[in-house]
Image 1 (cartoon, one colour):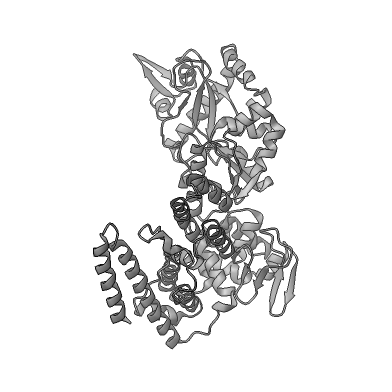
Image 2 (cartoon, rainbow, N blue to C red):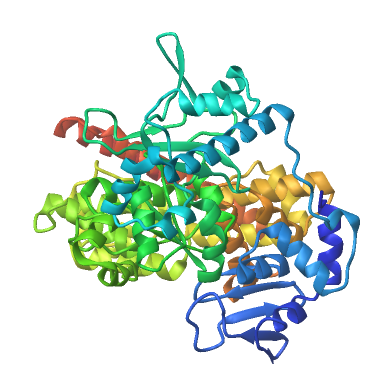
Length: 589
């Protein structure tokens, strides 16, 4: 196992400028270094590399981190593989860098053996005389032999007892076959639960068969698909169809498509795109996100084009965002067909063009939500603007956030400063009279910048250990959860190690599966490399900033309580509450 101490040793010996220079052209500029950023379509050098801080930062796309995160992002490999790669590049060796051998307990191994044998039987039965009906069905769906073999398709016999007998002939007992999810009972007989169905084997990331999905091939009242039940090795919420094939293709293409069903994956294959996976009739989960994250490639959501499919893409995007994973979306526009239907109706060339019609996640969410509301009405614009608040609030890229706010305000006519204040609170505030959100001359109050106060305090904590002690002594906390998360992470590292360094912070965050790890890395590199966040630490300033920050937080919380308190009240009651609110405000000032 690679320890934190070992990672720290490698990082101490590695020079980030030299490592990045081995991948891209780096130019010295004053005391810093710059380069064309490889993580977006860059033309002018926007990637800045700090030799003293051993970090890099792009001020256009927001990418940033240390030597390991750069190698991980550039080579599309995991963080630990990037650690091994950097060690190799600088000639650093240690037995702990060797990849661990996969250990499988005996019970799990037995189940995998049964599933492997079952898969071989199903593939054999498809090629036998018993599989004639299945082969005709495949012909009707334009799935030739080459594609059948690529996806390992099979057939469970029309004789429901045959696969079980063949498995028992291979030495497996009834309990082992049952534990693998193959067995079902019919009267006094043991039968194959997938009998008379086309078989789609499901593999895990290690290329082991972990389950099956059986599709009916006859027009009857049976369920269209029958999946393996949950077992020690199979849970459809934790596996992705075709992951074993797509992972290598995705690294070559630097992209993976996520579709809804098996036939959509087949359709993309027909269009020449082999880096596609499918969900298995379940919502997109955190486990799916973690599997895709391991690929370190661009994720493109391509669920169905109907309203349900588009809503599923919104939900999938939320899961990806929580894991700190960026993604894009196939632009369906007005099309409501799924990829397989497009292939059948228009052919593979049209499907290929369709699949390359990719838009940014922000454009997709904006356009989708706009369709849900009538923005020609006042209430429709209100609901549309409110619906976007959570997404804009969670957008960490400063330029993206600013562009979204401008777009919404232009679309709805809302006063930008008022809308920004709602977003900074991340609240959908239905208690405010919506008419007050619109621009009314110059009647605006000047609000002290809580964001600036938070960033100054966070910068002090990143660059001076005493600031961490002062923060703890004052019992302070941040209003924005991303700053609060960062502060807790800093304190945890500081108390564990007895000291703190941003280098170890970035390394630790890069290994974390936490929802905000990637967003926090972006925030850290923003704070360290943006010149307006570089004041020299001073305890007096730190105490003053904390005091002002506390007052701002108290005021914001008080405002939120006020808006909640007038909800559903009569005009007379509202007037009394407002008077009390203003009187208390005068006392506090």
